[in-house]
Image (cartoon, rainbow, N blue to C red; front, side, top):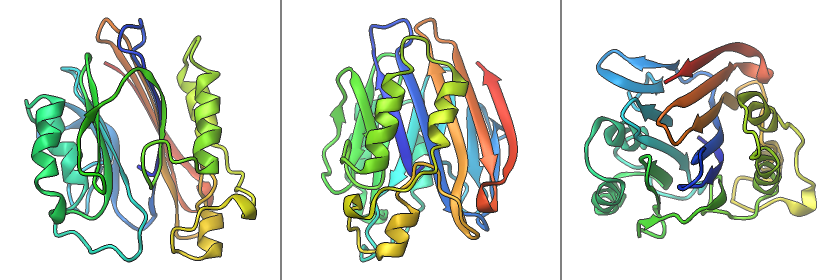
Length: 248
């Protein structure tokens, strides 16, 4: 994932509402959202190049999602970041225990942000900060820097999510993710990728010939344990390739 906005409300009837875009090169092979044949009860898309995933849930109530940290000068990790999500979803460690374990292995991965949780708790780890922390109730945004770094696209989707929370519906969450308006040049961050690329990456939904938003995902998790998960897939220039909806 390259953009996630979410509301964490642990005492609410709908404790987790999340909208996320996965941005990637279109040529990288991946499989759409579904149950994994080798991990029954695990539901996620799958990176067919490295075998991991960018976001997923389990029927037992585990949740995980990841974004990359944008830094063209960072060392290339020896392990795929997508395995961090898959390993948590397959495992049994509590969110805090799992992130403490991951924090000891940061040198193995390029920069990342990792969210892991259950029905009762949600934890976060930024690879640059290196310290796991439990998240309090609130509305958050996460892109390719730190949690709630005020990039224009992040501020827009957080505001849009806040307006959906009285009656969260997948269609409204997917609509806010479809925002393709780039930021003004004066508001662009400088992450070392050059002005043209900063402009391309500044919209919530990215479309180009080679790189862009591959999947938009809406997750609504209720206090009774039920979950609604909807994913839309896209190809070059933002072409709509399909949709998967799950009621768990």
